[in-house]
Amino acid sequence: MIERTIEARPNRGAASPSRIGRRREVARKVFLQLHRTIGLFVGAVFVLVGLSGAVLAFREDIDELLNAS
Image 1 (cartoon, one colour):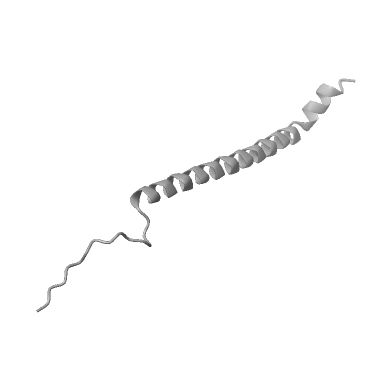
Image 2 (image 1 turned 120 degrees about the horizontal axis):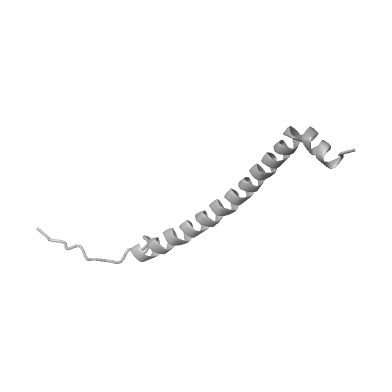
């Protein structure tokens, strides 16, 4: 019988653990920046909706305050 030994060859197609770690770090930074940007935009929309709703709810009181005569 012929015995064959398996030689340890570097995986040319697979990413090394350090490369995977860097990719995760970059992906995490991109995701956090995207999450922050979307959150700020949606938060600003909620503020505008809330302010316009408050103006509509107190429209008569605001009108009397601005036009006392």
